[in-house]
Image 1: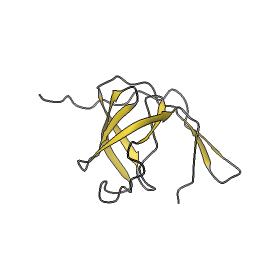
Image 2 (image 1 turned 90 degrees about the vertical axis):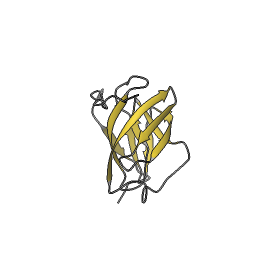
Image 3 (image 1 turned 45 degrees about the vertical axis):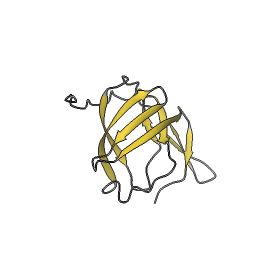
Image 4 (image 1 turned 60 degrees about the vertical axis):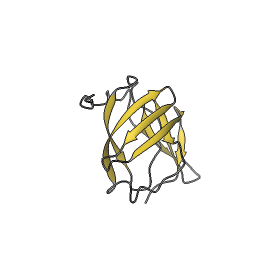
Length: 117
């Protein structure tokens, strides 16, 4: 069975928001729009400081298997892959290098992350 071309993600539902915190971390809010179950979408993922969390389907998602150093799995600081929502709490990101990453929903935020140099 031939797969259809990946779709473009729906437009965000708001502005990308972030806030520097006194503890040196950065707080982010999810602003991605809901997507359709089983539909493949093009997604550009920044990988300069590792992989995840990802803002997708109105929530943040992270690797099911914990942190993964993208070196050897992803080329460069950005990966232009395809993401598919497989269930309410599971998605798969197919890297342009051919590696699939299983993601789990971790919530709609906000989340706090260490800044990346």
